[in-house]
Image (tube, rainbow, N blue to C red; front, top):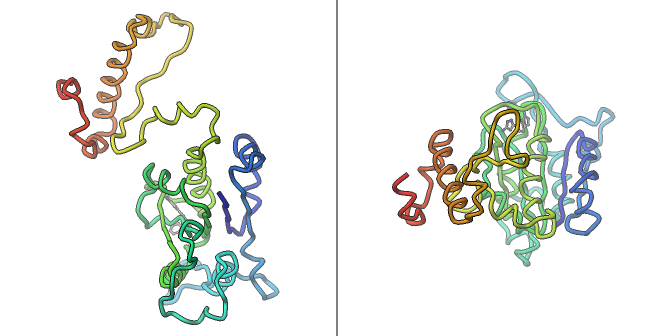
Length: 262
Ligand SMILES: Nc1cc(-c2ccc3ccn(Cc4ccccc4)c3c2)n[nH]1
């Protein structure tokens, strides 16, 4: 998977050369390039923002600078940059067509389902906004050019820019790549995966007794059937208590009879 990230703080992503992500790059699972949006400016101040049309506080990121950058990274012919007519998809090979992703506080929530879908992409291009955000015509223009453009919030809280959100989405996406995580099994069992996402059951390790607190006896029974049932019951109970909204999304057909008694 090729990953391009555009930001006015590209050094923020130096951290991706460490730990698991660094190993994944060394193994050729991912190829990451962080770009400085200011490299596509031409004025002495390297301006990337301007005042909002219609007034209001703060500054908005200029469409021209983003367009020069994105045209280049998307392989779009800049001579067509003035055209607003819809053209064929950016790439005849739909598997190679990049997905252009903008974090945005006023966008749909990024979910595990989105992470799973995007983990199958060949090329992701993330655009990190700052200030009060980017000119709304940027995503509009590239959608009209046939680019698969996504805008996502990562939660109901306000960040200062898109960099943190890109880091969150990148981790959720790339950890699903085959070979990225040491133990593939740990991904399959996780909560939030698939259509029947439940919160995870509580985890314990040795010692069985610690500071007067014991692990649940059933986990010491050696009866895997009972352990599985205990964990499923607890996952359902915890989800019902902490995130009842996830229960509403459960595919009822998949709940086995025992669950319905819980
Ligand atoms: N889930 C989530 C995403 C963001 C986010 C993403 C990109 C940008 C670019 C600029 N800002 C600052 C901003 C704050 C408030 C209103 C508008 C812009 C961003 C915030 N905040 N929270």
